[in-house]
Length: 233
Image (cartoon, rainbow, N blue to C red; front, side, top):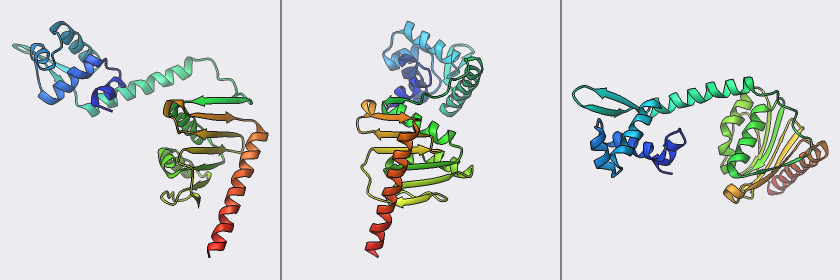
């Protein structure tokens, strides 16, 4: 993923991102110099520069000639993140109260959405977490698992030997690379895979019978690992 694409995730348009990258590479520039360097028309360059100044991504220096300087990337990104966090808190405050999660079955589609649901489940856990997945996927939720351990939760993991997490109960087994099974507080379960990127699909449910079924399945997997380890010894 290139810099322009990442910058667009922080609220810049495509042309603003291109102009910002040019300012970062070249330093302080006039609008004419930016247009010449980027090949973007002068009218569009000045529109982009105005947008950068408004969004806090560029400084305006107006001495003899108006020139533009890029705000350092970390400063710009931190400012955008802080603004989004304030907007998030305000949105949560003004939205209607959330209804309880459905006790039916929800289909979560797309790798980004599945990972977001996994992180939300782990973050919202109150007592215990059981998870069975590859080391690669475990790494993507490591911060949330570490936070759960810091909060005193029981964390039981089944994964590959390349993954370690101090404080967790970890059982090692060869895992299907993209398969997920996650149970939180014996009250909700997420199962499926991340094989197909945006087309990946997982099932989420709070139904007790399904949660109990998957919890028993994980216990059986642990028993099998214990038996296998016993035979190896």
